[in-house]
Image (cartoon, rainbow, N blue to C red):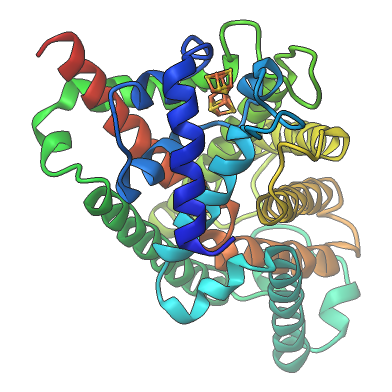
Length: 368
Ligand code: SF4
Ligand code: SF4
């Protein structure tokens, strides 16, 4: 839908909600919209990014399609969120990656894999892919240490810069001002809400996901993905510290911190991403938005592939399959990090910013 039309439609639906107020116990969106009589573009962006797509309001709504009012808040907010990710990303020329995100993610990941494979073939030769490598520095006999650390670091810093620039634009558009700096209590509460996935509890009984029945499954799978990702990140950081500062090269023993953290995180990611993908495929399409669905599936599939190849690499690291698995794993990790600022990963920064904004607003309402 063209932007002007979408904003008008959003205002129409939210005006109905403001008069109805039936859903105010489900999440933070409804209490926040009730503080407003009219909605600026910044208000709509803020409210959309507060929505966790739990769909409780959709199944509870007496005005949802086929009613002539056609109120469909999860679909509406998802469309606004995709536009937020696209409009606030940088550089503008790459914002098209949000349009056909599934295709873009597949092509970039395949490209990353091919580049790494060609570089290994050119500099190390094909034999390195099929020989067994064991002992200290085994991985670096296939892909040198510098090649395994410098490009990922540059890509990660670039991704962080793009996401932080997007967060800054979000904050400016929603007129957050300096409120976050002067209200650390609100920051703490928003962080607690984000880490506890508070609004995936719905009104307390869970999401209406994948259908009209209440369930906590989505929240638990999301927890496994989120904390699994953090544990894997911690594992990589500890391994980098060992290699760079202590001079202990990978691979590490099974009972070392990098392997234990990586294994627990990897198992969490495998279960969480498979579960969320299953729920996505089973989910009702009426409250869904096409571009968001494609983005969700691409991101989850790539995370699943990354954790699967990582676990296989761990299990088979002392066999002749190690070289090939290492190239495949690095290719998928490359795809994940290159596409991070241009896909579903971006939701983390905007949702967190919206939670901070909401926390500030709530404290001002409760303690004027
Ligand atoms: S989604 Fe429907 S039931 Fe809920 S507040 Fe809006 S109009 Fe009312
Ligand atoms: S889908 Fe859930 S989180 Fe989003 S507005 Fe409706 S009740 Fe709130």
